[in-house]
Length: 370
Image (cartoon, rainbow, N blue to C red; front, side, top):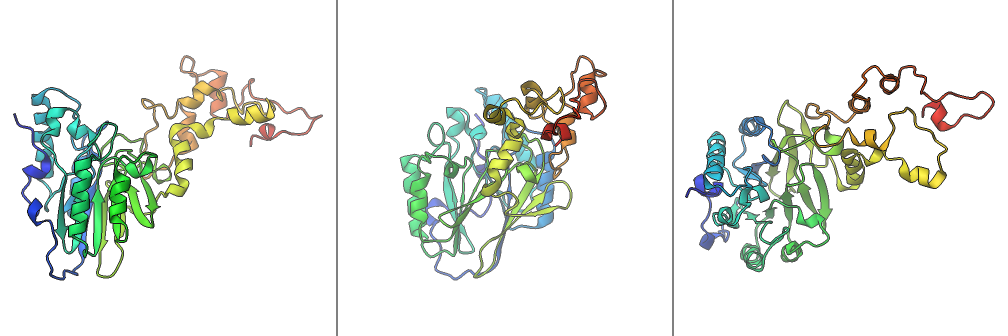
């Protein structure tokens, strides 16, 4: 049965578990590595391959991932073996070593899980701690893995930086299921956490340290732009002597480079409202003020407001294109009659259904079209 995790497939300079401890030598050279994001979970063909090409053009020393490398969710060994073969053929195109991180798609049944393990290594006096966030049901770290993380951290107390990788952003959840114990072990040192899973970008701080949810390198995405954190990218991390890591996000297609704070947790609430369509919901205002604001056009109904962001009708755009009103307008017309008054109203044209202004009363905001 061929059921191999990628970090066992590809030969690279990974220290054996017994020699995870950093050497006493002072390694203060600049360290530069890249991170590739979620490939699966609604995989879009060809994007991950282009992400590999992008990383090769950036010349890192090695490549990390944040999980979800194959589709998984199958009980058939022949299927998951074919998926690993497909991935192996792609990552062989990297010009530098590749280090895999496990995601929920990669271990979606007990037999697939048998091939994976958490691990750690040291490179240029920086500790890399790679954990399995699917260790317990619903996401989290089990007792054995927490003990492993504590030992790796304690054994490498003098490293200049620690980079922690796992798939599910447990640090965003109320019940962190073991991550809080890992964070306690990291207290007092400099570290950065990288995760994925959500398919949209977030940068945040916990205990003064940067935590990231990276977006996609081919996984399902509306590609509605940086404002909602939906874009295909790879990330580079540069650690220079005596400095904090420089983190940059590079669009898979085109030459655009985005800073680490392209979407911070401060604006995540607004971005979430754009992603799920709740920004269009005027029900709370109607409940408070009554029905004093008529719809701007007859398409402003609960059903039509839900259309733009439904998963099967999500407006598609090129990477880096922000959500615009034009993306929504084409969804709210009545499909059964493309020339109906409702269709013309959605386009901003004249219609007998459009609210008219009574000249003998003050203008409401809705009458002004605001």
